[in-house]
Length: 76
Image 1 (cartoon, rainbow, N blue to C red):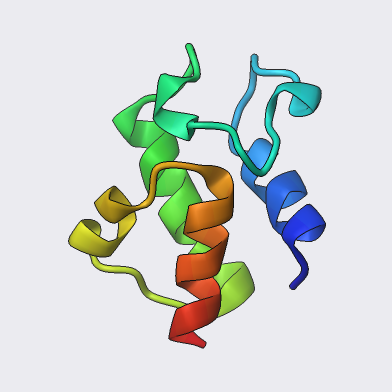
Image 2 (image 1 turned 180 degrees about the horizontal axis):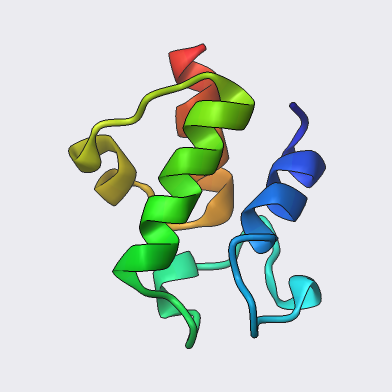
């Protein structure tokens, strides 16, 4: 999966946030709609679409969407 595809899949986890607001450099926890439920959705999408099971500590270590993508790629 390429970064742009990852961003699109990431953006699908949000109902009210416009996809155009989510970019590689976006600090996703700063998004107004961010919640623990969305975080669980993101972790589920990563497990199902990317085949990577992230630990909670790994997930918490990422700040931006690009950092999360790089983390997932490093686990492949």
